[in-house]
Length: 245
Image (cartoon, rainbow, N blue to C red):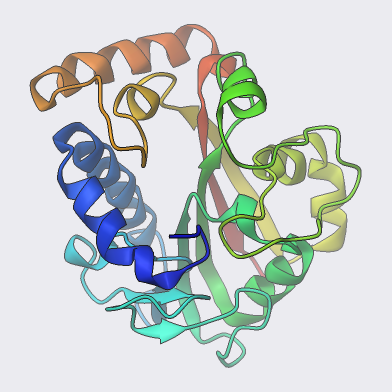
């Protein structure tokens, strides 16, 4: 099946669930949703963008799952650049490995600024082109990757096949001043890297894994130690944004 075929959902779900170490990594990412939700206002709707074959709502009570593709089991079909929510309706927006697939992230951020209520937060979990991640994304990973791109938008071949794996780093780190200028109501709370090794050792969404479940705890300690020594060893980032006015 092609990457942009929503019929791949069952295949991807089965692949994720067949790899215990990868499941554990996803559970850790969804725990970050719960952590950030704890800092959000009590009222309002919490959504995930690009839910696809994930299982966030199993671990995040009340989460509304959305995707631009009509995957089976997704609550709503939503284009992140034109969200069907009222001004200030949302308390939380979460996304895991989705931001780098959005062909016009400036449009998405305008929508996030509009739809989030004051105090609401957005958590972007995405790729980071660091010392390990950069070479993997450039030479090994199948998705598009252009850390030198001057624009935040790109011509997309499809919701999953189109990508710039450096996009979160470009917007929130390299072009941080531009982000602050364009979106004065959105505050970049933090940009933290993580996971130098575990996701790749677990095989990602490929059909293989080099990391057994019993080794995940030790690999987690190694990952955290590496990032503690050198932040640029992290291959993924956790970006927290708050609407402040």
